Image (tube, rainbow, N blue to C red; front, side):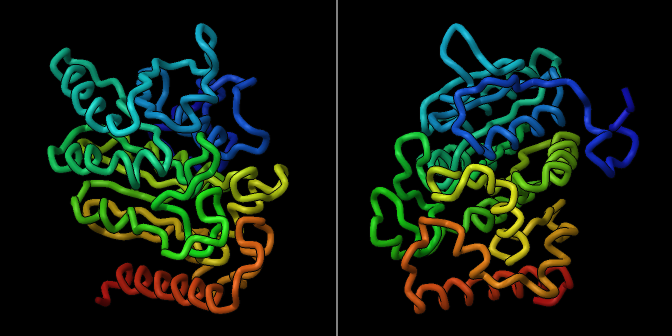
Length: 304
């Protein structure tokens, strides 16, 4: 097998063939979170442990005693994943092991219920990788709104559209000054793979925020999952970047998209959760996207 740790990975063929997430999971058709986890585990390798709170992944891994996972998994309470990972990381270090400790949690268990434990683990300098796969609602329990649900989105608890904006989790994490944090998207698996590899090469608390489109929750056809992720990036709604020791680098797909973003309507119109969106809300969403693009562009350029 090619030694991918000493060369730049430039195409998908360079990614290891080993599988740590087997076929026949309990995931919904078109689930992009499963796609993300597949590449996360390929990057992490066999000497890894997943800490999974209550979320979609705690269901798609399979029904005991069967499992689709080929690495050890700890299923923990909704609020406890970062705290559990802290203890696990310290235990491995005390035993002289370099096992990768990876939290893989949804937005509900990160942006809302688990944010206290996440903040504590980052403040303590825990050596682990925390990954939030964000489908912008509580997908495991019927798509109720979460703090990550965007403005205007219809969920089972916001049938008329969410009246408030998406919580800016990344700026909250940034305030903890981690040595590495990044954003990713299920539609760009090579970008995700390389970011996980880099994160695991750095000591201390690391964070990756993945946009994971959800067909039943976002109400689009299952075969459109990759297309939906690409539209999120091409419209500037989701910007791919890395922040390594405080220095921001915008990733290639977003750098190109930010120069001339695709119309926001291209992303919105394919999702039933934004059905009957008012012109006023759409205009506000457009302003928010543009403000975020300009803010990150200024930061990368060193202009504050």
